[in-house]
Image (cartoon, rainbow, N blue to C red; front, side):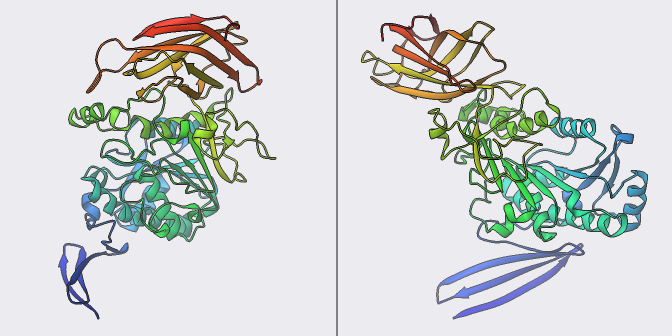
Length: 484
C-alpha cells in the first residue's frame, strides 16, 4: 500500500510543501517541494535532498557584453520585472540575429572570476557576438548539496531570459551557444531540456559529478539537450571531497579526454594540498582544490583564437590504450579539434595529451621507460623527462602520480611539449622519490632503456642506459642507441 499526504505553507514568494510517501508498514519517505512564481516547482530527490534557496538569495544576475561594451556590461537581476529587462536589453544593443554566447560559472565562483573575463574577451576578439554572463554567487557559494539544489532554479531563470529574448528580440535558438563549467555545465544542460533541445550548442566544461552521477538524463547534461553537445573532461577521478569534481562519463555527441580526463599534468594530486586550498580561502578555480577541474575552461579559452596549434584528438578505447601509442588513426573526416572549433559532425570519445603549462596545446610524443631487475623494493615516486632534439629541448612531467616501481616495470606515457624538438638525439630522466608512511631515505631505480616516438612523424628513437641507477632528484642524460 502506498499513501501520499502533503503539508504546504507560504514563505515569502515561495510555496513550500512536504510530501510524505508511506510504502508498506515501515518505510517513510519525505519529498519536499518549493514552488516559485514564474519559475516552476522544485523538489527533493534521492540525489538532491535539499530544497533550493529563494531567487533573491541566489542573486542571479545577467551581464550583457558586446563589442561596443567590452568592459562595461549592462547588468540586471533575474528577479526584476520584464519592463526592466526590456530597458536593459535595449541599452545593451542586443541583436537577436547575432550568435549569442551564455557563459555560466560553477561551484564557489561568480560571473566576475578571471576565467570568465578571459573567455568573454576572447569571444569578442573572435567575433561580433552577444555575450551574456550568468552570475549566481549567492547560490554557488553554499555547501555543495545546497549549491546543487540551486542549479535548477538558475536553469529556470536562464530559460526564462532566453524565451523572453526569443519572443521580444528575435533571438534565434539555433544561434545560442551555452558554455558552462562544473555546476554551470549542469545548469546549461537543464536549460537545454527546458527549451526542448532547440539551442544550437552546449559546451560542457568538466560537468560536475557530485550528486549528478546517478541522476536521470533529464536532470543532468547529456547529448539530448542541444543540437550539438561537446564535453571536455579534466577532473574525472572518483570524487573524494577535494578531487574528482568532474563527471568522467561520456555525456555529449563528442567527449574529449585530455590526458585521460583526470589528473592533469602540472596539477597537484595531493589530497592535503587540496585541503590547504580550501582552508586557506583559495577554493576558486585556480587553486589546488580545482587545478584539474579548472583546466577544462583553460583549454577552451585557449582554443578560441589559437591558430598555430590545434587540440587535435584521436579516437581510442581508453586512456590506457592511448598512452601505449597505439591510437594514431583519424576518422574519415579527420581528427576532431577539442574546444571552440569542435566539429559538429564528430561523434564518440577522443583522447589527447597537453602540456603542463599554458599554452596547453602541444606536440605529442610517446615515451616508454623500462626498468631492470635492480629496483629498490621501496622505490616510490615519479619520473620527469626532458626530450633533447636538434631544435630544442623540453622538460615535462612523465608520471602523473607517485607510484611504487618494481623489477622489470615498464611505464608508458603520452606527453606533449610546447614545440617540436626536431630529431630526438637524447633523453634526460629524473626520478623524484616521494617520502611518506612506509617509505624513507633516498630510494633508487635502475633504468634499462627509454623509447621515444614522435607521434607526428612516427620516428622511433631507442636510448640505452647501461642500466643506469638514479637516486632521488638525480638527472641523467642518455644518448646511446646500442647496448640494450
